[in-house]
Amino acid sequence: MPTVKSETASGSQQRCRTRVLRVTWRQHRTLIAVVVVVMLAAAVTLTVLEQLYAHSPGPVGSGREPWWVRITGLALQAAQLGAGLLPLLLGAFVGAGVVARESEHGTTTLAFTQSVPRRKWCGAKIVVVFIPVTAASVLLALAAREQPAYVGAREGRFAFEHFTTTPLIASLTTFTALLAGATIALWVRSQLAASAVTMIVLLVFGTAIASYLRPHYAAPSVHVMSVEAAVRDGQYPLGDADRGTHDAWTLSYDYVTAEGRALPSLWAACPWHGDWPMPPEPRAGEPSAQFATRQAEYEELHRITQNDYHEYLAACFRGHGADRYEIRYHANSQFWRFQLTEAGLLVLVITGLLAPMRTGLRRLT
Image (tube, rainbow, N blue to C red; front, side):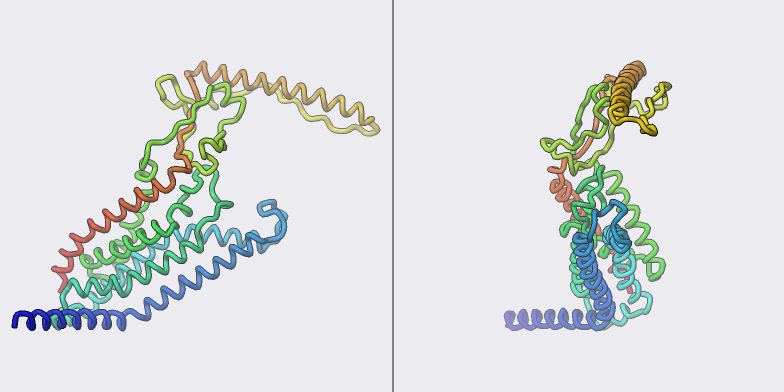
């Protein structure tokens, strides 16, 4: 007899779970269909645009390409940024909206009076709404993901548009945003207020991660140059394949003292008062050999002046305390370490949301 009762209880729970899932699907199928179809259509459109842009005539970025190529490039850049901000919108209008709408309209009261467990009611929202929306957002992020040709010179693959649109981070960020929106909606019953609060919270959270946490997932590498080398050879030498810095994330570049203190205002403290030679212009009727002689004289004078300029700057910078030039950066090889670190952080956030969500469910009537 106990076995029969156990099987009956198990079957009853299964029927209840199926009923809740079915009801949730009927309630939100229009929203799910619209969101998923729009994101999939956007993903297909972006894929086509990327192919057109990649095979466009003429050198891209030269200013001589057709007008539609420039517009396509701008559209792709906007889409890449939008894909990174998509979790914020989904969390505010889908995550918070789905839960707050039912609470505001009183359908939760009807559900709970019909012996629907609160955890099953919440779980159905996650399974039926949040998971399909998360999957569709990953496909859109993949389509909009920044291609290597668009990678910024200072951030490389760590640029916001690229870092946040990998399948790993896109899925976890979207799911975290949806779960955060639902949690806030359990405490803030008004749909409009819940969406507004969710947007503010996610914006602050995303800014904190990108600006204050992500740069410190690992200790930065430091490339050191002498003051003279930095002045003479340029201050942005991060193109060395041995350091993998073509796609590096440059954090800072400064002339520093022997103690490591940055000196940010050296250029203003060392103005150049010398005169640069003007390049010669061909004269009417001037023989080519004569013009070539004047051109050679100019190049020699320019080289001497440039050497004087570099010597002056190096001496002036050292006179103001500069001991060396330092570039702090995260190498391209650190990319997946940063991805896994942020993924672990998002998993912790998801886990941390369970407690306020459980408390909010108990308060929900």
